[in-house]
Length: 415
Length: 107
Image 1: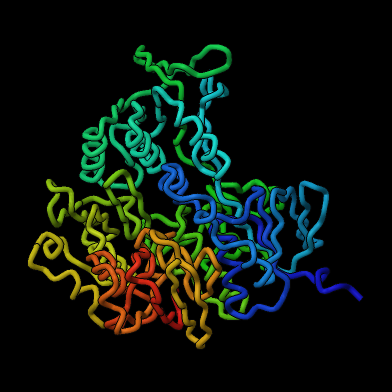
Image 2: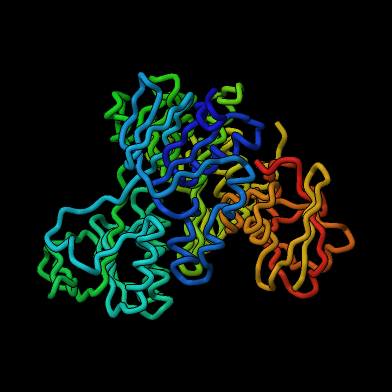
């Protein structure tokens, strides 16, 4: 008779926010089968958002970074397989192969493989002192480098690059950000919000080069010490942080014959074409009613955790299409950005609040459809924005612009 | 060291030592208390560390800021007059002996 551990159950590939949440939700809902959480990093599952914030800054330690203490996993019968990658899926045999040669059988497989850093093809990119900021090991390395940093160059003015810049400036380090397009966070925020954040970073002493391309990274003895731009300028840099986005980890699914297109393609219930295999979080491309363009692939804690809950519900016999409202946040120095909804494709921005004073919300519209709301140092607006957008209740551009319009009342209305 | 008692929705009570400067949410997560989810990690972004504070202890707590107040409006278990987000309750000596009841659901 097979031991209890040999009975196939749910195997989760990836122990990030989505993978962890799925395991926790299954147990919370009383799932009794085996739950195996396989991650390629050696540590216990940890939270990623603080890596580029309080953890890099040294304000919290590893204990507060962890999702849960080690005892949680034993108590909830979640089998953690750490430090080992999954190398292949055998759909016919319903098993996965691990890098250490072991095989794990599943009755249901959930791919929560996340994403990895996009690495620019630049001469010198392999030099020592070129850092990334996505996982714990990278953050530990960066933290050490930052202490010894004399000049930092950041490639890419997205959330991660800007969060790093704020912390580095807080430690008095010179920071120069090189960005390909003409504004910060161009992919995700309105021009108004880009301008606000660029201004705040400049006031803190960050230098920017917009519309700038890097020609190469240079150094001596294998260590980076400068960056050459295509316009001929040379920037000193004994630390280079590469933050130009991520690519989804979809190869495992593709090799198993599952459809991928900017992520692992799933249906409204987050299932692939194989009824036993789901995909969640950063690696999943899914249909969204909140987006002008569908399917979408999102890189966010909310998305990963809500995907996990949706799949947990389905595995417990309560299937429902995924419908959660996307939301995001970033903390850059004293500036706090919170976004509700997906604003990609907006045509009109209505500002509400005190833009000049740095406490405002930007309502983003396509025609008269409210796509999303960016709140800057306005946490209450964000909370109301989430309710408004989740319920599909509209706020017209005229109402948004009218300071006497009661946003809370509109958000809290029961019908 | 100051202590906080967490009471789950089904009445299970756990008392933890909470160092000064640590939030009521952080201590719960560190010890794996079920009933505090803390999805955003303490950024006052998610309302999944919602607790009910005993009425006679409310005055011992730091004042509620606008963001917490608004976030509580959207909590999964409806807010009550004694609702707080535990990530915003950072331990100070006067909070010793705090008792928090956890709601039925956080998500």
